Amino acid sequence: MGDFLWHSIDGIYSVYIADVTVSDVSFLRAGLANGVFGRNIKETTSDIAKENNAIFAINGDFYGFRDSGPVIRNGVLYRSNKRSGSNDVLAVYNDGSFVTMKEENVDAQNLLDKWCFAAFQLWTHACR
Image (cartoon, rainbow, N blue to C red; front, top):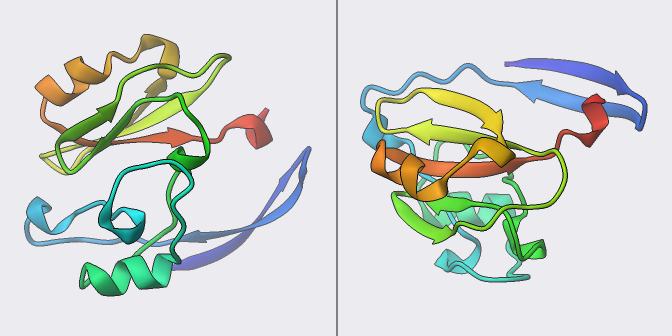
């Protein structure tokens, strides 16, 4: 795992990078705060990890603070509407591949049909 500082127009961020290899992609799962989908549900990353027997966990996309943007978790489509503006999505497929794409080009149902088991909204404003 590496520890880096990322300098952007918005300030300096600490960035942690982990290289994780799993023996089977079924071990890769997305947890939800308090185990449910919804708006403004709060739980610490460490508590979500503990409840899901995770060996590694990162905080997610904070979908619950917004009412738009595609949300897929563990093969379930929770929300398919798009955010306004130029945004990115990270799709995680059942074969273990990770693909980023522009949200304006995303059809959430199409992602699900192509064996996407999770779609996360990315915050890209700091990169511009």
